[in-house]
Image (cartoon, rainbow, N blue to C red):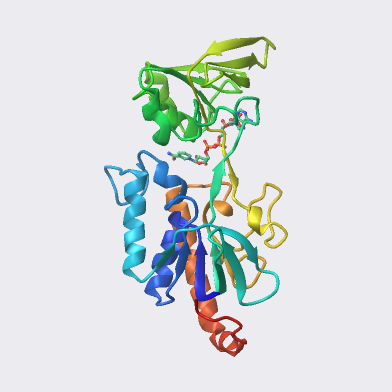
Amino acid sequence: MQHEQVVIIGSGPAGLTAAIYTGRAKLNPLVIVGPQMGGQVSLTHEVENYPGFPEGLTGAELVERMRAQAERFGTRFEYSSIVEVDFTHGRPFTLKDDNGKTYTADTVLVTSGASPRKLGIPGEEELLGRGVSYCGTCDGFFFRGKEIVVVGGGDSAIEEGIFLTRFATKVEVIHRRDSLRAGRFLQQRAFKNEKMNFVWNTVIESIGGSDSVDHVRLRNIETGETYDHPTEGVFIFIGHDPNNNIYKGQLEMSDEGYVITDHLMRTNIEGIYAAGEIQDPIYRQVASSVGQGTMAAMSLERWLSEHEDEIHAEPDLTTES
Ligand code: NAP
């Protein structure tokens, strides 16, 4: 077992920011990176709205800058994912990763983020990676010269749809309503883009193809008409769900599954904090996650200094591995 003062679960903007702050506070944080260093933003082609970068930069570049900054202040990174936690039997808290390693921690910051929501229709899972994708930046290149569809009407669908016009000859946006949820600026860009086309009031019932996607079955929800639409790619951007599985029954959550925090980013368990998309169903921006990571790190740091004597008095059941 390895004992830590501060364990940060996740390496998105919230986690890396918290690592910078707790590192600078000499708390020697350990970041358990999770499946992807930087989380979702690392796969974003261009970040245009993060302050301080007027020309924009790639998500991967932004993440690398944050990672290096955290490392500069002594953050250590463990390239694994936490698969089990015990937050309910008091301190030190126990965490297990997918390499079979067990950690104990005086404080934990949960920044596990969120994952793309699935449509849950026939063909979606079977053809994943063979035409079905949840990431334009990752997979767009494979659709050069092809016709594809994008599902959803929010910022993600429209932003990714515009990006995908770099590769695809035609991007058909399938949306269940007759107006977009995406911001006005993105809408204007999309409507002006000659490669983009909109199919309103329509849902996808199934995705078809044997080796790879060759069509989608569409249904107009106003007329009830169903028909097959030939396409080689289906990019799905219909929102996200928080990565909350390992915390169920331990951390208090909203009906939608987001971890509930107070104004100090505290969860219902003393010593456990949460920041970023695991607890934020509304803003979901790099800048807001960075802010929440900062708040959580500062609260955690204050809590540790106020409880130093108590923590040192706790029996040390662990040995350094
Ligand atoms: P979102 O805003 O929740 O939009 C999801 C879209 O998918 C909506 O248009 C929704 O339709 C549709 N949808 C949901 N479930 C569906 C289903 N089962 N079948 C068909 N369509 C479905 O999610 P998002 O676009 O991922 O954005 C999430 C947050 O991140 C937002 O706050 C957004 O502003 C932010 N974001 C910002 C940027 C940026 O600033 N550049 C980029 C990406 C994301 P309805 O409209 O009918 O509900």
